[in-house]
Length: 144
Image (cartoon, rainbow, N blue to C red; front, top):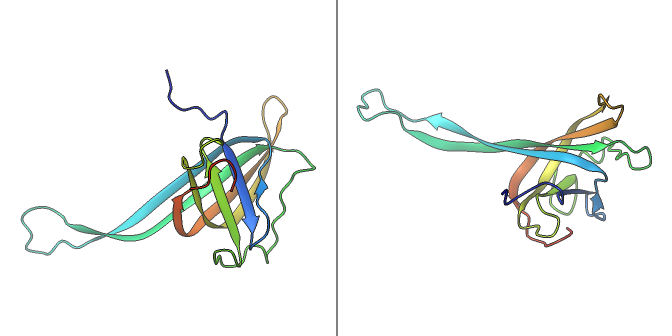
C-alpha cells in the first residue's frame, strides 16, 4: 500500500509581499532541482575523477484544470527579480495539504503559461517557473 498519494496536494503563490493565493483545481505539480558540478581532477590523478558542487537551479510546473474565473495572470512587473517578501513571485508546493513540511518553498520567475485541451475535452493550463535562489522545505502546516 502506498504511503503517499497526491489527492491532497496543493500549490500556492504570492507576488511581492501580497497575500498567498491557492492555485485552484490542481491536477499535478512537478519540482525539479539540479546541482551543477565542476570536474577538479588533476592530470596526474590515479584514483578517479573528483568533483565539486556548483550552482543549484531548478524548475517547477503546476498543471490545473482551466477555469476562466481563476486564470492566474502574471505581468512583467510581477516577474521582477525575486527578493523575499519584497519583489517577484514566491511558490509553495505541498505534497500533502495537511502537512506542509512535505513540500517546497522558494522564489520563482514565470517562464511560460501553456493552455491545452485533453482528450476528454478538459481544458488544461500549465504554469512553468524557474526557481530563483534557494529552494527550501516548506515549514508551515496547512497554508502558507
